[in-house]
Image 1 (tube, helix red, strand yellow):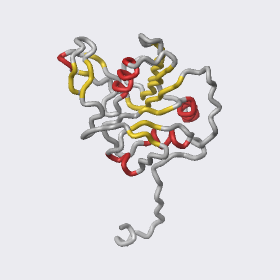
Image 2 (tube, one colour):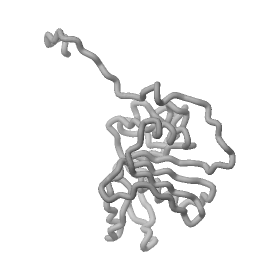
Image 3 (cartoon, one colour):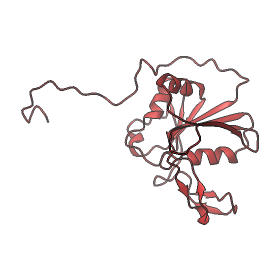
Image 4 (cartoon, one colour):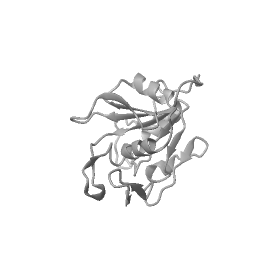
Length: 193
């Protein structure tokens, strides 16, 4: 388009992708005594969940960290942990760990970290869980794949452009919704997500 319009100054195309100098594959040396680790990466908007009229806090919105957290809390996974890595948001907790009823650990990390720390988080994880509602691109699954960590995610929106069942695990979805219903933690009733 630029050439057709007569532009003659130097032009460069900078692809959107993963830096192979930082995000590169290394075989995992997994300690069998370490808990199985799920990772979610996204933006914590502090979205207010209005399930059944309650003002419950959820982790994130379109990136659906709240959904990953809720699913993890409801599963009986005593020997597992979930790392929720989010971008900082005003008044959000910085870094804390708590246990689920079954004994699983949830690590909530809401702070900026250097790129080498992000690479370490991706390598430490056994799987990235990313039930996004929709993406313009979706970089975290590619970063995870680059270091050898598989991802569980829906095959829709921009992810369709690179979804490959060889290294991605498809999360069923319908019209952008992952699970059409969930239980209200206050009443136990099934409600729409």
